[in-house]
Length: 376
Image (cartoon, rainbow, N blue to C red; front, top):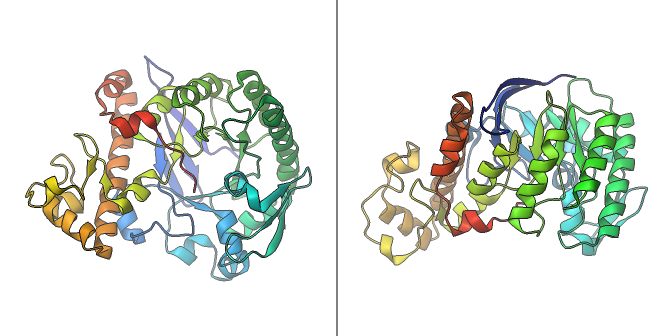
């Protein structure tokens, strides 16, 4: 299943311009997927998501499998119809949740047994179960089950997780039944480049529609994240999409696009919006600070989103301080728009062989420099 067109490669870097052709539409890359973990981007309706410029969103099969259940979503006509979004969707498999909820899970070669973080009920998941669940949910892109070791794991632990991910990948590939759904393999190996390259050889040999870099942005230093990703990406198939899972500060995106990555997701813009931290062309703004109590200026004069064209910083601060639900909507609308505008600028710069010029001008605040992990 060929889903990717490589349109242009930047003359001065490994940055690529491409297009994903999926069942529910095309996606211009590099692209950023807002995270709708439970089938909802908190605070936004589907038309508002479209208004930001978002082309594709991410949901989490693990969470949807637990609640409301694959049977409910399938009976409703699939995830697109269930949540009222007619564009492309990618579902994460739950591998990160195995890592983040390790106290509730037990991992073996067969799969994962765990207790629900919702009600404590016992469950088991195999690589085959994860493929079947996503086939019932019906996203455009499904992810295989992988094992994601923490950033500080020793080499033996990382090696075992990489080998187990390969075993699970073979089983996942054999379990596929839907011809209209792309499936991405996941590359593991921690920050050990030799393990990464061995994982690339193994997973690519199995054969998937695209490839993701997992097991990064899990606590390791950010320069190590960028270095390993940029060293791994060129070894992935040139004419297939490359997805970096779970990193997405503006600085992360610039560094990783420059290393040859096409697709991103992160909860950062939506989570920070709910906390009142907003991205602007002048750097990040903490809107609850007293400096904005009577500030008549728009949040970002260079942004054309509904929030920036209709409301002042003073009003946005008032909403946050009064804990008005509208604060979440307006802040999220702006932050997601900021990310989509950044991706549009990146695509244009690549097309014009000016990516390095753009990279040098993108504002990096302390937030952007330090980075953050972005679990779904």
